[in-house]
Length: 143
Image (cartoon, rainbow, N blue to C red; front, side, top):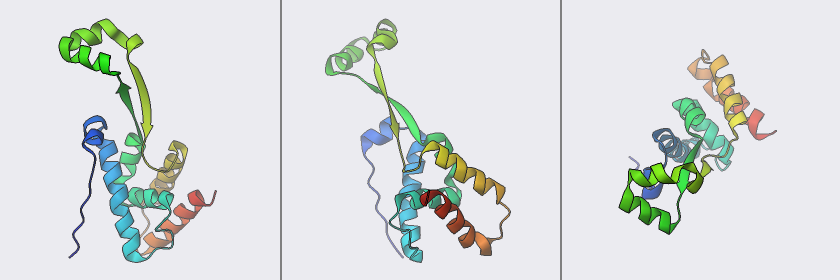
């Protein structure tokens, strides 16, 4: 039996949506899967993302690959603590700056491409799964 400890930053859990957290955990666990089978692409991060998608987390990648985070300076944070929702109403969007954060190593178009391939060949027998995975991985990684 193998014990796996995964450390996730509290800040990430607090700000990232559920789908993004699941995506990140699936990615890390896919490192174990590829290492356990001795796959030659086990150190290739794009292949790790594809593995997670193949193992059933495809929709999490489609939904959670990026998310938006508000960036407030110290004064804005203090004003929000004092005034709560009133600060959000007064400040509106002109005072609040946000940033888009991406998770994973594939672009969105690569995620869509891989998901499309997986959807087309969903009826692939389990014995052919390895061949299917290799075709999908090499199509994206060897661009």
